[in-house]
Length: 356
Image (cartoon, rainbow, N blue to C red; front, side):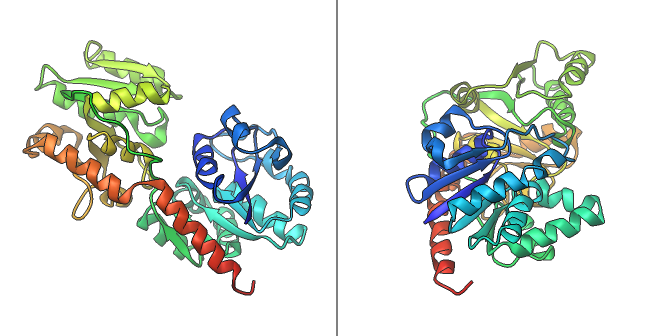
C-alpha cells in the first residue's frame, strides 16, 4: 500500500504516526513546514515534500493553501493509494483540493486532532462548510474520543474509527512516587487554562505543606503564570521547567502522584495517557472526552469542577497507589498505539477492495 502522510513534518504527533506506519506501508510524506531529523530517517528524501511554510498557531494560514499547486503536482507523480491527512481544516483541505484539482485516484483518510473538530467549525459558517466538505471527501476518518467522533458525524463524516492516540510502549517502572508531587505539562496557552492549574494547586498547598507542583512546557502565558505564583505566595512550591525531552519528562511523570490537565477544550490527550501509564492519577477538566478516561469502565482519577474543592476530592481517593496501578493496567489494555494502527490499516485494505 502506497500511503502519503500530509501534515506538519515538524510535529512529534505526525512523527509518531510515521514510526507506526513505516514498517507496514510504502510511506511518503508531505509537510506544510519542514521535517525533523527523526522524520528524515524514516522516509527517504525522494519520498518527501517540504512546503516550507510557517503556519500560525491560531489559523488564517493562506500561505499553506498557496502551496496547493506544488502539492497537487507532486501527488500526481506519486500516484498513491491513500492520502492520510492530519488536522482536517488545513491539511485535510489540501488533500481534498488536490484530489479534485488533479483528479487523483487516491482515497482520503482524515485524522482529526481536536480543535479542528471541537473548535474551528463552530467559529463561523465558512469554517463549518469547509470542515463538512473535507469530512465528506474522506473514505474513512479517525478520532481519539467518542465525543469527537460524534461531532464528526454531525458534521457529515461517514465511517469514523475511534481509538486513542496511544502510547508506543508502556514506560519502564522503578521510580518512587512522591505523594504530594503534582505535574502539569500542557501548553501555557489560553485554551489549556494553565491558570486553573495554579489556582487548584494553591487550594491544596494551603492545607498540605509538602505539596509541590512542577509546570513543564512553555507558551504565551508563561510570564503571567509566574506572576500568579508570586502573588499567591507559592514561589517556593511551584517550579517552571520549560520544554522537556522525553526522558526528563518521563522522570517527572514517574515521581509524581498527581497529573493536572484542565483545558477548556480537548479530546483524549496523549499526555494524560502517558501520565496514567506512569501510574499517576489525573485531575481533569469537566469535558466529555475526559469522562472517557476517568470514570466507570475507564481509569481512576478526578474530574475537577470547583478548583477550591480539589483538597476534598483528593481525600476521597482512599488508595492512590492502587489507583495508579489500575491506571497503568487500563492503558496497557486500551491505550497502546500499534494495535490501533494495525486495525486502521486493515480497514484501508478492506475499503480498497470495494469500488471507489
